[in-house]
Length: 171
Image (cartoon, rainbow, N blue to C red; front, side):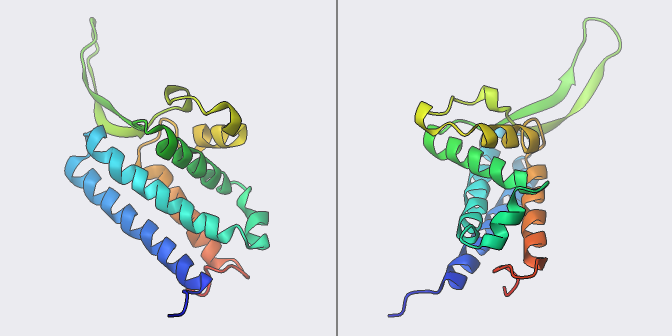
């Protein structure tokens, strides 16, 4: 039996991300206001987003563009993936809904499941602190609706797909 090529592994990893993203969208449609229901497909989507990212890091051209603007979403993705898999925290929270002030006016905010701020997650182990990843996560994930950074990740991969010399380009 022949071992799969690196392109086959990359395709598998990218398909894993796309399938997990679809499951997250379905869960948000059905259970959109339940942070507990959304937390599992959110963590799975983040896991699968890191797999093609890690497969691509052997590509020098990819490394050179990764740190630019939307590239920070990938650094934040890796940071929250590490927090999710090593500390097992609930990384999302439900916000909004009916809030009654003691005085007028009464406001009703929509119920939204959002990513928690990094300071609300368990601390990183001292020997695995990633200050740049922590900052990137807070800039690209924290307090945002769950779907928004996932769409940024998808856009990052779409941009990478269109980059000359990218290994995603042939897929």
